[in-house]
Image (cartoon, rainbow, N blue to C red; front, side, top):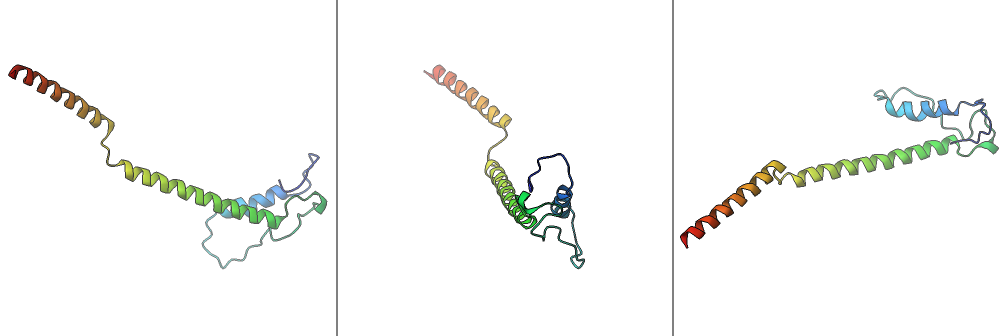
Length: 121
């Protein structure tokens, strides 16, 4: 929410500006950095919006978006690292069916040993 809107009239183009400046530019892979693009959020005021109705300026929106992306990227990388570490740490365990088979074999072996020791007495 960048501005206060008390009516349904969308006389400004803030949503479009934000979508183009923040979402479209971050999702497109720009490989040629020599092309100069216009920074839509380099202003301290919104077009067609009085400053009395402005909650966050375009520059503040851009700054908040960068902070959000940085924090999200950090959180995602931490989650991925935790998943990979968990996978590495759990690799020493055999699959569940093998654990069950070992328990059954051990139980059978113990039963066989008990029967053999009873017959020897």
